Length: 395
Ligand SMILES: Cc1ncc(COP(=O)(O)O)c(C=O)c1O
Image: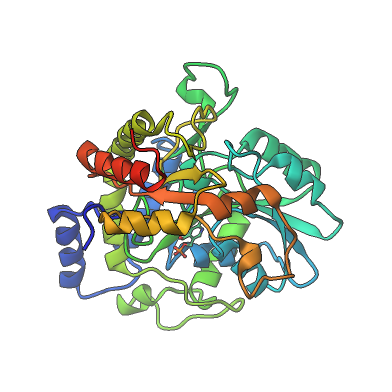
């Protein structure tokens, strides 16, 4: 149906083979592939350091990971959590599900769509327990300022890394040529971080996620939450290593299955190359869209680190009818999307959350263009020609 679709899976024979191996093994849920995936993810986030101490638990989704993080940090009724105003609704939903209250933090500017540290600080009350941030589109938030303010106010920090596997933060940003020691992977700053492996993400397993922490006590709570609070995993009983189990505290079933972990292992190996391809494609987009009237591009001169280029967002000028643009591009066979509708506009959240004028403006005028690792420059040209026609800026 589409001449250029929004995203495309980059699977090849390796993913098929990995799933076949699991199917042939006769055991389909959390076992060897899952622990291999978790170990590899930890080493990857620690930039290949052999003594990786980062705890990574593969789970059923990023939403599960965020929910588990809140529960493990004992966020509950009476608490407030500061969440990003420009993000997917999973963030606000898990805060609600934990019984706590959302307080939205605005973005920094029309160029920097990351959560504004100044706005976070103004939203802190005696009830605030945690700050949740999102590295929108794979561009790092200002981690030096955010970690400092969480420390100052004694708040937990949760990183939503759904968009940012493989992205890092560069300390002393603004300077050229950061050495490796000045870089740190996103997902390693907070008390906990959550990654998504949903069907349109940089690592794709269909459904799946990873919860990450350096805190051993938190890791142990998260393990319990993932699988009914059971002290012995089912696989150990299947293998005859244990007969029964105890339950130390209540838990959920947020387990990943082995096919997902097998896919994740292959996808993780491909990630660096795939993110490099995304970068090259985004640079081609910049070449084509810079100077196009009616459009501006966020993070155009980004200097806080290496992004993962999860999506290609643009901002249409206020006079442009976005619905008409989406429809015109659809007629050209170009699929687009919106990241994201305003939280304040959803029925469940109307009159329940504070206003955030900058994020709400972006929510009303943002348009997401197609981007995936195996996209071609010719496909980008088709998208840009279609967009230029749709906004009436055809050269
Ligand atoms: C920023 C963000 N957070 C959380 C999620 C939820 O991820 P999942 O579908 O793995 O639960 C998504 C998914 O689209 C997302 O984009």
